[in-house]
Amino acid sequence: MTTTAGLWLAVVLSGLYHGMNPGMGWPLAVSSALMERRAQALWQALGALAIGHFIAMLAILLPFAVMTVLVEWQREIRNGASLIVIAMGLYLAIIRRHPRFLSRIPPSRLALWSFLVALAHGAALMLVPIYLGLCDVNELDTGHRAASELLARNGALILGVAVLHSIAMISVGAGFAWAVYRWLGLQFLSRSWFDLELVWALSLVLVGSIGLWAAY
Image (cartoon, rainbow, N blue to C red):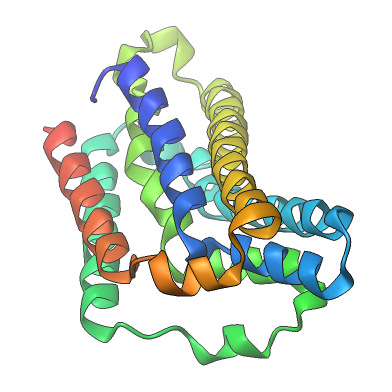
C-alpha cells in the first residue's frame, strides 16, 4: 500500500468505507426522501452531503500543500500527521460520543453538517498520511523542488484525492440510501446495522500506524 497505485487505491477504499458508515449521513438522505415523499429529495440530500464531505477533505489537506518545508521535513511531517490520526482514533474509541453541536444543525443544512461531521469524526484526517505518501517529494529532482512547482503539483494531487475519495464515498452511501428508501425500510437499518463507531476509531489508529510505517 506504499506504492503510488496502492496509495490511490487507499484513497478509493477509504471513500468506500466512509460511504458505508451511516455516521457520514446517508440515513439523513433516506429520512429526507421519506418526509418529503419523493425520490428527488434523496438525491438532493446526497448531493449536499457530497459537497460538505469534499470541502472537508480540502480544508484538511490544503494546509499541507502550502508547506514548502515538506521537502526538508517530509518524514517528520508524515510522522506527526500519522500520530495525530492515531490520537484521534484513540480519542474516539475511548470517548464514544458525538459532539453535541452536530445535533443542533437543521436538516436543511446537510452540506454544513457533512462538512463538520467529516472533520469531527476524523474522516478528512484519515486521508492526510495517504496524501503525504502520494506527494513523495524525494522523487523530484533538484530543479523541480521550487516552492511554486511543488505547490502546483500538490494542489493537483489534493483535488484528485478529494474528488476521487468523495465520489467513492457518496457512491456507496447513495447505494445504501436508495436500497433502504426503496426496498428495505428504516426498520432494517435500526435492526440490522451494526455499530461502526469503535470500528471507525480503530481504523483511524490503523491508518495512522500504516502512515508511520510507510514514512520509514
